[in-house]
Length: 320
Image 1 (tube, one colour):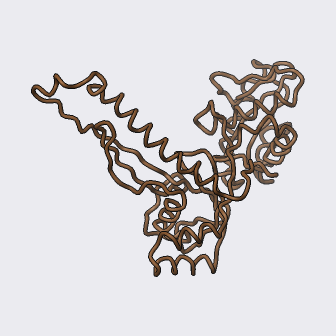
Image 2 (cartoon, helix red, strand yellow; image 1 turned 30 degrees about the vertical axis):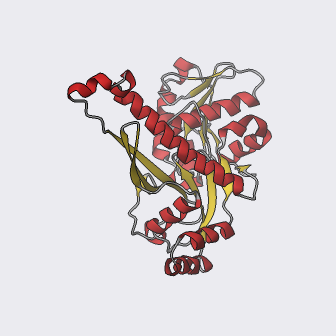
């Protein structure tokens, strides 16, 4: 099994920012490898050293690449951190310096780093994947579940939910050139693998996903006097994509991760006037409480759809 060391696959529930997630995950694996737990996170983690082993005098710098692509590794930032760490070498007392990254560093990047400090040790993707396999039972909570969506079920969804001419068009596209992508929802934790056509538009993809998981359409509805506005979009490379653009034009290719982004907005419908105030309760007067309740109900309804559909899938979930 190959562990994917980037979002949305890798998670540390206690962290929000991925750079902090990567730092916490490195600390966990390093501690699992050592008999003593004398490695700690520096707070604030600055001056080029994020983690420090006070026993073996090892300084660790954690550099993460959110895309998971080696080409996106920023060697300039890594060199800047290394230079800062060299400035505090005697003060902190480190004797070894280790760069921890979730991608494999290119030869040219490694040369640049060793030009600044020949003794640098680089622990890259292959190293961490090996440790994940070794400590598979300890890292299970750090990886979202990967679920395969069978192409047959996807085709059935298209046939059952779309008009014949539109269904035929999508079937034709899927019968020709296809590739696999990873799908993640901002409202649910699983990651899905599915076949798509490069000629699908973003609008096609939204419609297929929404119908497959039986998610509510983009609409407005009211809960406890709170008007909820729900809409769906596709986010790729941290950008909301135009519905009319095909995947090919956007640059979505084999193995890319897209996010099915559900936006929930709210507005208070209650207007308390005149004697109507005498018939209200404290809860009705608290818009934040009613808002939170309404949004929670909507989120739970969306989560329930994902859970129900996953139960119908034949293949077992596998962490990846």
